[in-house]
Image 1 (tube, rainbow, N blue to C red):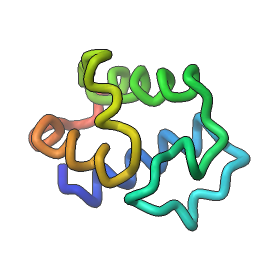
Image 2: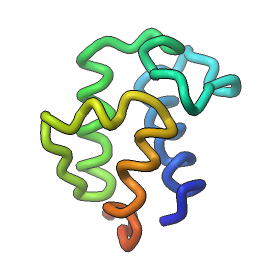
Image 3: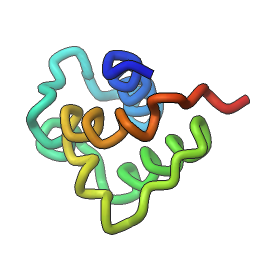
Length: 87
């Protein structure tokens, strides 16, 4: 997956978790929690959705890597390089 593919997937996950949020103005370098009304359960939903869709395991101590779009894409890029969406 390319960085753009990863970004699109994260936007898709966010739109599922927070359907009332406007994601069109999402800034890549600003933390999701500063831009969106996400609580800790929503954040866990993001992690679980990545696991469900791509079988990606993210250790709890690395959750901070998923704070913003830019850091999430950077973190996931080497992991997702050869991943295809799980059936």
